[in-house]
Picture 1: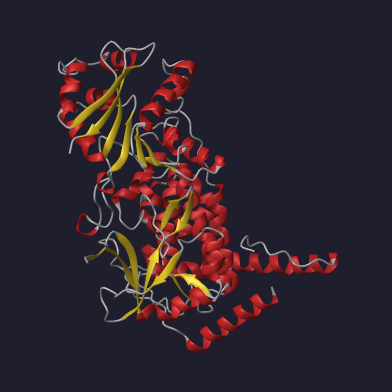
Picture 2: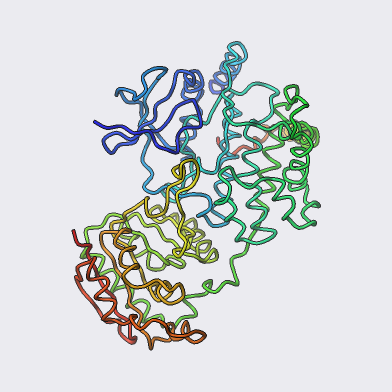
Length: 72
Length: 458
């Protein structure tokens, strides 16, 4: 798990440095981009609260924060 | 050696598919090299393969067909039958949508993102939806919105919402537009009450309004920021919204067909044994069960290891069939929505991006059980034209002739003039005999019907 996280961090860092050009070959649409900004404001707060609450719960119960992704 | 780029593979400059000597390959271009390395080295490829979410491939050492700008050549695992979203039942499209979102979340965790979210990039393989476009991933840049958001909503959310909230037949809109259902159209067609559904309000109604407002593209979207957390929130919101969309299969003409026909349980199981015995006489490795209903007879083939396409005109029957596939974890059967009187045509650019139904054949064996009277009488197709169609569909044909005097045929003729003097057993044998050799003809006990095994003439 630790190695995995380390690897991911390494790649994220590598991407930020290299800033490879993303091949956006489809038109994302101006309206579609802008509405994501609005939706982000609505749902992003929810995710932040969920994560924060997860950490508090984990701290109180002494367990690890639950990762709700199903790919592990 | 001949190689030919697939006509569906031209939009993305990252690479393209080509056939060479009956094998399928994918050329990856230099422009995609960094993204490809990231996919392979970030652990994402491995994880997606482990979860059965991406088509596996191997790198091969053959000459790329367009060497200028080529980076690598891959050989992906073959999918036995390519199907299209307008041929899927409600839950098939829903499962494909949820799979796409799951992949995008897994990609994000590893520093990548889907640069497209086309429903055509998902195929059903071994009973499960998976992504077939290895070149769909690109490096994720922090705080950028999802490039494929519009496409995802058009290809998945809009048709699913229309099918669930308005009419399941609206899934056929995917056949009209090559890039999904336009969101303004979906927003207009959806009932007003869907504006009270937060997911549909945001991702369809507000999304459509925003597209309309900015269609002149005067405002730049370049500065739009969506944090990683917010992106996760958007994906979770789409996931929840799609998962909650529901459609209950009931109420069509064919939904309860087998509990509603003149076949008793015993007669059905005898017919099944007869079909199995005829199938044993063929050397077929693939089957198309046309007019398959819920796949009762398709399973005669798929349970014997033949890859089987089970097509039906009725969305209820196809939905029930798909649910059974999932419940039993069946790998050899693909339920498909298909109106044989108007089967899927060649669509898209140059009529070639999406292949017609028949062009995806021929099958080793075709089943046409309790079908021909619908085509011949309800749709007025003369027997010689039916014989010609079936001879293009498969090398072997197991076909049930349902004569006049049978209760089902009489029902079809009850409300109309009988303009079918040729529709007789002799007429059938003459028409099909010109295209096929009659290998055997078995009367079905307790009915006036005959089950034929036919082999296509060379």
